[in-house]
Amino acid sequence: MMEFTATGSPRVVSSTIEQYATGQGSLNAIVVPWESDRMTLSMAVTAVRGEGWAIEHTNLGTIRLTDLGNDLTRVAIAAHDPNHVEKQKLAALFERFAQQIQSKLQVAP
Image (cartoon, rainbow, N blue to C red):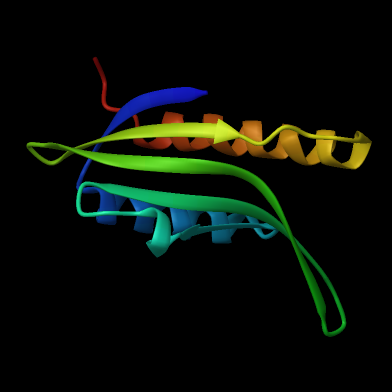
């Protein structure tokens, strides 16, 4: 689990994370409305692999964005447990993504 504080509202931070994930090519980060409320947004991060008409999404982890007020958001990133070698590779991809998000968004102490 990784936690840090970012500048901006949860909605603004989630949009930045979505755009960054899309730029990675093989990742998606989307807000999950049914797991979110007025103060907290929940995001699912998935690896995307497609062949022809088939698109496979593998859930890699969750990002929770909590409004701290004063235009600050707590970002909590948790990876899902990999079960086999392929998922371990995807877990490493998620870990790199999480570290990049932290370096891009974290407010200096």
